[in-house]
Amino acid sequence: MSDWIGLKNGKHDGITLPQPHEISSREKEDAMGSYLMMFAAWGFGLPLPFISLIASIIYYYLNKNDSRFVGFHAFQALISQIPIAFLNAGAIFWLLILLIREFKIWQGFLLYMILTVGMNIVYLVFSIIGAVKARKGQFYYFYFFGNIAFLRFYGPNAEKKEEKTGPNLPPRGF
Image (cartoon, rainbow, N blue to C red; front, top):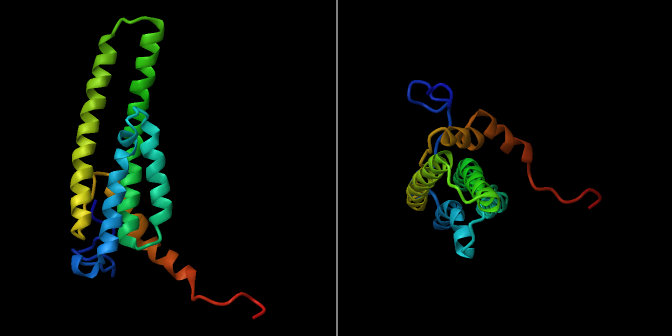
């Protein structure tokens, strides 16, 4: 698995990760903010799971180019929120169906709600840890999602993205 994220003999294919003292306070705060998007729906007091997901998408697209560090954390927070949003949406949809058709609670619904609440608690804990680590200028890798975010911002194709930008030039004709 370590070869999958570009590690060979403990080295990162020539990629040097920024150290906490090299990251500005603004970058640390922006990276931390990406994990706080999960509270967007809670701030409205609404049980709408996709509000937080939309907030994360907007936050990611506004901050992904600030730095690789911010982009990594924003992308990790975004993609890890997708399954939680769908779990929550399923719970709300199922609850509405039960309330409209009949008020009989099924065992399957109770098991689904226990799973959903448990996953939300786990996500909350990981997001708080991720936010604290990001504020300290450290990387924190969620299971599965951390590897995806790392490859996107620090993997072999990430440097190719930077090379394409080129220097700033005035518009043609000047």
